[in-house]
Image (cartoon, rainbow over all chains, first blue to last red; front, side, top):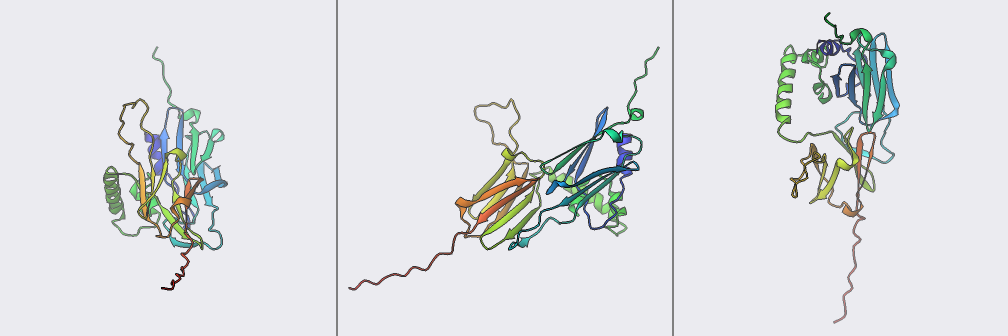
Length: 124
Length: 149
């Protein structure tokens, strides 16, 4: 849990103010962290997931624009892109991160680096 | 703001992002989280909805990421459009008369009176449910002949 807290606490704020932080959940298992990010309206083309200098960045752009002739009567969502940045530190094996986007939900599997895994020590 | 509030981050990180400048923002955010959490337990969640109109129809776009198509319910009755997400009852609940499953998310919107209820269509793409509510063509005035007495 300490690792989880440190991951959350070091979350980097998005650099552009014209972006929204998506709803996201982080779960931890023995081998990996599972990050679920809600990105309604984001297709695969509009999604960028990058890891640079131990920071995981998720950028999701909403490609949909109202067709000609449509006028907005009531808006509760924004057209601003989603942005999420999470500092991974040394806890995650960045080269083994797997991502899946389905129905506006991005599921990221962040396998733990060997050094961050719990180790059982045999008592002689 | 809802997106920020509903994140799992501690409240101070919201304050630090500069969107709330009050010195009490941390406390306010914690109170909001407390009330949101307490009230959320009472009923189905809500979700953001956009409404558009063109010459022929009204279009409702609801952000419902990660839903199974079979769990999405769209009902139109008495000029009210109800969108809900109803997950199936847990497996093993094979009682002869199972209680109806409760929605986990629900919104009700008023729709125009001239909606052609039999032509409502819906799509679900990238976590956005779009419901198209076509309008009935305007009633043509009918000329009534006066019969000679």
